Length: 544
Image (cartoon, rainbow, N blue to C red; front, side):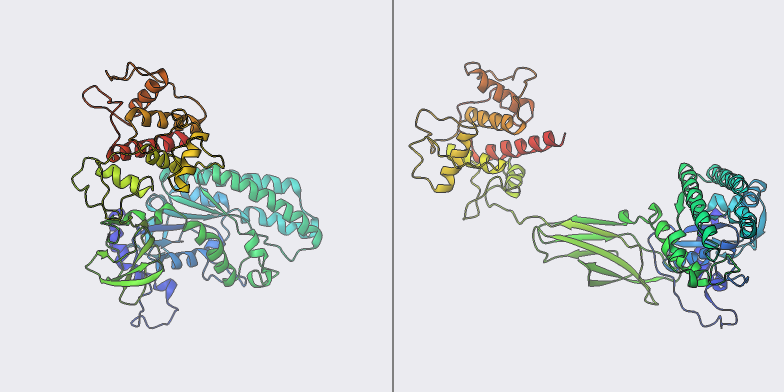
């Protein structure tokens, strides 16, 4: 059976006639209603009693909830085969369990199989989806008697415990045969909504307890409990129209399929197609998308490419890649690719990708510079800016005022206080406020009444500013792990040496030939590297 999946996929459209085409319809006039798909086609086996068999409210076998589930999954291109041939009206949980244990062979009722009969354990082993509905027949005889004798609590307890025990055993058997199958177990609905009010009250309490117990049992076994109680209760006249029959109408079965089973089944990881599409961002306005080929029972004719929910392109079936250009920089886009067949069916579970285009950052003087990536990162994060002429000027020195402004902006510091420096009045109000904030938070100290804003910031001074910013943000001092391997910092005070050691231990700086060059002015390229690495350090430390 496992080797025949390809055959079953191709044949499914023909073999589904017993479910999709009314008896007597002209088989020569067929419409392709099966959508293309990227998912791995699954095999579906439905086990259980009359609710799977398809018994309706007048006692005739018709379409069950499982049939509607199978039709919907097949139409969406999700399943290759379906069989409800092991479900029979009147089956109890014991019957289902014994069938599995005895590995019974029964006729196929469904589609996608090469043979007319199949063994149960083989079907379970090859199935990706299994639904189970059983237990009602374990209780119905007692419940019917309750109409005249009242509910026999002891008998109900014994019967329900037996049913739950059998359901646990059924799930255990399935797990042994196929540990990877997704198993969905149907909960009980109120089968006797026309009973007297007194019996209704007792019965509803009983159902609540039973559904809770079954849910716990099912989930403990790694299966999924599917609740149907509220679905049926909201329209009893339509879904349970015959007071003398506990079986659902076709509308009831359809409601159970559409509102209970299909939502639960479609949440499965079986339908995850996220890996079927790849995105390669070329630049700030250009992106290349590629995707895997979809499959279809007849054949793919084209792919529709949707950008932010709107159809943007239609590609021939032999093309599985597209380049999107003229996009907006630094903008979020969501692209969805849908496969289409000749009948116009679009794939349902289709690969989708969301990405953000890059900022259009480029400076004319950094192409071959060692710090290019740091400079672009600093510009991207808004830490440093370029000049109006399109240059970054990486070898230009950073002044004390500039270094202070960069650090204060990156930390989002503000103050209403004024700095006590007499040599910053010629600077704009924004820069003066930033220097004042740096002073207020202890990042800079100055010399007496002088800040010397126009002087280049030395590497030692910048190290101090970074270390103080670290302590301010994290509310504690940095504990050095060792001694920095620089031969030219011994004469500096402990605070400065600790600051330089922190930069070294955190990989923010590495020095050159065993020296840190503490008195050397800081170039814009070095500042970009230091500030980008410091920003990354703060983010990683805050996450931890």
